[in-house]
Length: 405
Image (cartoon, rainbow, N blue to C red):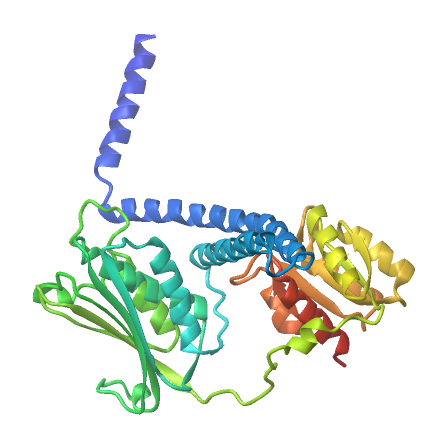
């Protein structure tokens, strides 16, 4: 017994020595692994929460149609609807933060990027920090992985916040430029410039050359510090961009990001739905709604039938396949949830297409950023509606897809 206790004590001493000898970098990596796991968990929770919000938002919109617009009940339901949309926006921001970047680049209006970042900042930063924005890029567009760029800008905003512990002003701005003062030849043509500035404590001259180094930080108490700026620079470089900083100790700091600009797209543009289009009704077409959430199936049936469509519902992929086998010639459109227990959305979609290659399908999911089904959207061009459904948008997309060739 004494020998076993001695052996155990020796093992504990060895583990202790090993732990004491671990580098700060190893501790950082362990913390990053924890954060990665938390990110995956938060992404799944956000997806589930979007389904919950779907019922609240959808039924509040259904209730509005039954109420007089000048009634107190109508006003109260509008409050519920607005709160649901704000909650949905916050869930979308959580997903933006928790999901890995797709690496897929799309044409983006920088206004959308700034709006996404400011939504997170305004909902999470202290009230003693005044937040401003200035958008002066005109019609300039960029081709980027928007989520990655949002992450980079958000990291810069967080860095600015930490430089203003007593409060101050944070400003996010954009402008277009036909030439730059950088030495990189790639940016001698048109560029879109993002700037993040603060009125904080500034950066000491001796630290300016090191701020983008991994794990470099002046905040020793924070295990995760020292990576934000390094990650931001890496993400920006992935977008063929460049980042520079201007600062001095005791003065404000300005981070400038150059991203190559592209010509505005003049290809297919979907016009805004007019009021008349929103009020249009269906012509009795049969629509199949596939979703494992009973409340959402019932809600979709109600709104679609009210607008003149016929509806059949399925609670899983296998049920949808059986219904299509029986009534394939009658079904004009399928609204397919891509994330149901026991069913892989992509396989269900492919099975439905194999039964009827001409079937029109709208896919839907609670994942709004870098959806696991993005490859399907890209390869097949399948229409996509994010959850929670905004019922006017659902009706507009239903009408658009049914009328498409």
